[in-house]
Image (cartoon, rainbow, N blue to C red; front, side, top):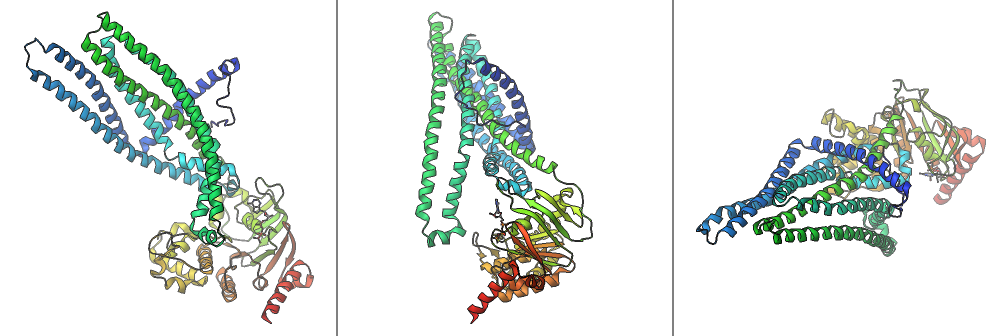
Amino acid sequence: MAQHRTSEPVDRVDPSDPAVIARAARSQRKSLGRLRRLVVRSTSLVWQSGRGLFVAMVVLQLVAAAALAGQVLVVARLLDAIIALPGSGESFTTLVWPVAALAGLMALTSIITALQGMVRRLLGERVARVMTEEVQEVATGVPLHRFESPAFFDRLQRVKSNALSRPFQVTQGLFTFFGAVAAGIGVGASLVAIHPLLLPLLAVGAAPLLLTSRRESRLEFAFSLDQTPNQRERFYVNMVATGRDEAKEVRAFETAGWLYRRYRDLYDRYLVDLRAHLGRRARLTVLGQVVSGLTLTLTMLVLVWFIASGDVSVAGAGAAIVAIRMLQGQIQAMLGGVQQVFESGLYLDDVDAFMALGRSDRSQEGTGELPDRFEGVACDTVAFRYPGAERDALHDVSVRVGPGEVVALVGENGSGKTTAAKVLAGLYEASDGTVTWSGVDYRDVRPSDLRARIAVIFQDIVRYAFSARENIALGDADTAGGAGGAAQVDARVRRAAAAAGIDDALGGLAHGYDTRLSKLFAESSDLSGGQWQRIAIARAFYRDAALVILDEPSAALDPRAEHALFESLRSTLEGRAALFISHRFSTVRSADRIYVMAGGRVVESGTHDELMALGGEYAEMFTLQASAYLTSGQ
Ligand SMILES: Nc1ncnc2c1ncn2[C@@H]1O[C@H](COP(=O)(O)OP(=O)(O)OP(=O)(O)O)[C@@H](O)[C@H]1O
C-alpha cells in the first residue's frame, strides 16, 4: 500500500540535482500506475454506488460538450451571415435561425449545468454513504489498542473527513476532465479549421498550469497532514466548551474564558500556517497563470498577424476569439479535473492505508472457536503494557474465574484492576503470559466468538441517546431492532431491567421503555447517575454471556441498591461467572474469591475470611473502611 513520506520537504528540493531528476522520473512512472489504480478504484466505487446516476452524468457531460462545440459553429455561421448581409439583398430574417440556434444551445448548456449539479449531489451522497460504512466498519473493528495512539486518531480524523468526498471527487475530476476533452475536441476542431497553428499554441500555454497545479495538490495534502493534530485539538476544545456533559462543569468552574483563549490560540496558529501555505500556493498559481497568459497573448498576436496577412477572414477571427475563449475555459476545466484527481488521490491513499490497517489487523486474529461448555477463564502470569507506555501496567498477574463463581478485584487507584479486566475481556492482548477460556488460548480464538460470550460494563458507562429499551437491548445488538420478535425482546429487556432494579423507574417514564434517554433529541428524558448505571448493568444482564465483568458497577448506587444488585447477580448467574471490581468492601466480602492488586500485581488472594486472617493489605483496607463507616455512624 502506498504510504506518503510526509516528512519529505515538498518544496525544498533542488530540481537540478540528478538524483532528484532520477527520483522524479521513477516517481512519475509510479504515479502513473497509482493514477490508474486510483481511477479504476474510484470509478468502480462510484459506479456501484449509483449506476443510473453514473450513466446520467456521462450522458449530460457528452451533451454539454456537443452543445459547446455547436455554439462555436453557430457563431461562425452567424458572423459570416452578418458580414455578408450588407449588399447581399438578403433580409435580416435570415439571421433569426442562427440567433435562435445560438440562444437554444446556450440555454441547453445552462440546463445541463443545473442538472449536472443535482446528479452530482445525489451521486456524491451515495458514495459518501458507502465510504462512511467502510470507515465505520474499520474503526469499530480494529483492536482497542489502536485507540491508544494519537497517530491513529489523526488518521481517523482525516479519513472521516476525506473518505466521504474524495472518491467521488476523483470520479468527478475525471468527468470534468473527459467532458472538457470532449468539448475541447469539438471547439479545437473548429479552431484548427480557422488556422491549424492556433490550437498547438493554446495547448503549450496549458503546460505550465498543469505542472503548477500538481505541485499545488502536493502542497495542499502536506498542509492537511501537518494540521491534523491542531484541527483535532480545536475540535476537542470546542466540544468541551459546548458539550452537554461538560456544560455543568464549564459553568461551575467558569472555564469558558480559558477554553476560549486556548481555542483562539490554536486557531491563531492555524491561521498563521494557513497564510504561509496560501502564500506558497498563490506564488505557484501566479507563476502558472503568468506563463500561460504570455502564451495566450502570443496566440492572439499570431491571430492578428494572420488577419493582417489575409490568412484568416474577419468572421473567422471573430469565431476564433470565441473558440479560444471557450477552449481556454475547457483547458482550465481539464487542469482542474486533473488537479482534483491528483489531490483527492493523495487523500485516498491515506484512506486506503486506513482500510488496510483493518485488513491487516483482521489477518492477525485467531480463527478458532470456543468449546460450548464453559469451564471458566484464567489469566496466567500475564504482563501487559499500554502502547507507548514506559512501564508495564500488569506484571505476572494470575487470576481465574470458574463457572458459577463471583470473583472480586480490589486495590488502590491505578493498581491495575481495570487493565486486568480488559485483558480478561479480550479487549487487550496480554504482552506476556496466557489468557484462556475453558483452557483455550484467547489468541487462537476468533475475537467475535469471544466477545459474544462476555458482557462488560466499565466505570465510564456509555449513555446512549436511544430509547430505554434500546439502551438495554444493545447488550445483544442483533435484537435491539426487535429481531427475534418484539414481544420476546420486550420480555427479555424487562427481565434484565428488573434484575438491575430499574424496571419500575423505566415503566414510569412518559413513554415507558420507548422513552428516549438523554436530552439530545426531542421528547426525551434523562436519568440520574445511579439509574444510568443500572441501565448499563441491565445491558450486561441482557447479554446472554458466560462471563460478566462489572468494573465498579455500584459506585453510583446507594447501599441498599448495591446489596440487591449482588443478590440478583448471584441468582442470575446460573453457572456463568462474574468478575467485579469495587472499592466497597461490604460488597466484596461476599465474593467467592478476592484478588488484591497493588502496583500492577496480585499481592493477595482468597476469601474474605482467609484474607482477614492473613492480616495483610486487604485486612488493612477493610478495617479502615469499616471503621470509617462506624465512626461516621456514631
Ligand atoms: N490507556 C492507558 N494508557 C497508558 N497507561 C494507562 C492507561 N490506562 C491506565 N493506565 C495506567 O495503568 C495503570 C493501571 O490502571 P488501571 O486503570 O488498570 O487502574 P485501576 O486499578 O482500575 O484504577 P482505578 O481504581 O482508579 O479505576 C495505572 O498506572 C494507569 O496510569
